[in-house]
Image (cartoon, rainbow, N blue to C red; front, side, top):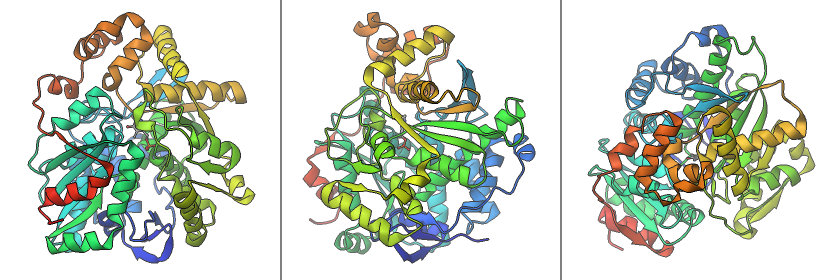
Length: 498
Ligand SMILES: *Cc1c(COP(=O)(O)O)cnc(C)c1O
């Protein structure tokens, strides 16, 4: 059955998957959602035999129903290749009773690679399918990891340009170095004097500005988004939950239809939403455990039903989760409002006007499959040290937030029987200083690259290629602007008059 996509704020807007991927965000500011969630049509026995690429096809064909088999398989083949440093693409590692799903074996050693290595191919295929003549301009706000993963994915992809905005003082030194050394004629990196939410809001405003769209079109350009709001990002993320479940079954860890829990370190709510979609496809997931850092808007939301972003923005050691507006939550709100675009639009208007909204009791009842909690900075560091000391396994700060929240969940619920997958979203080499400081304060005086070498020794893992690469790389991008200058910066890059 073919699937159409409508806006979370207006049911009248209906597009095919390829059109929704091209647009990224709906004209009314809403997010594209499938008109129904398809059911998995392969058995777990069959999935257990499949490679990551084969699993990706089985999942993605159901959502991207206007792509031909050949087109989709071509995209998958180009995405999940030797850019990943392991043939499994997303290996599972057992440590201390949980299963860490390592989503960081791609080009930029963070989980964004899982989707951003395929998005450029989905996008250029979608452009061909829809006879798009304009050059596609990818406009992205990043809290650190999306930026580099998008740059790596789109660099030198024909018919595209990519412009990335990041908070100048809100990403790790390694994240920044990764971005500002990006090669590729079509890549542009801009630091802003503001935080991630301001960057994201600025980008969203440009997307929903009809005057700007007109100016772009005249110049032969059109925007598209690589942010996690694009369904071309969301759909590939469903794959690894299905893959991980099938691997647990194949390895005899779980029996057929056995329920597993999933823990996801959450920022923009994209990764955990993908797990929710996987569950709705029929994958036996029990609790969806949403882990936040000290920016615990989502924890408060799951506890009280009130979403309130009016609070201090805290910079933490898990910067990719330093977010006060979790964009993808809108898809869940739409869903629990009974797929009612009008109701959802009212909540989103309240969020835009006053920074808060409160859902109804009826809506809250549908959130029982979610469990939210958070880990503070000390708890996160302690979890890194505890796991390392007990097992020798080293995790990054984001994964540690999830791992610490899982411990809290166990304490609170005694649900020790259910096998649990923890999404491991970044390599510890990406956040080396925080990770090594958590393990032992004596590392404080070392340089970042010395720390990477030391981590390699104590964790018994090779320094990833992505880190080796930037040791000596040249800085190619140094543009910095104020939040209010974002639009003019884009115009300048594209050669459009102000
Ligand atoms: C982006 C990111 C997250 C948060 O994922 P969302 O899909 O935005 O919730 C967590 N950890 C890392 C390392 C990330 O890069």
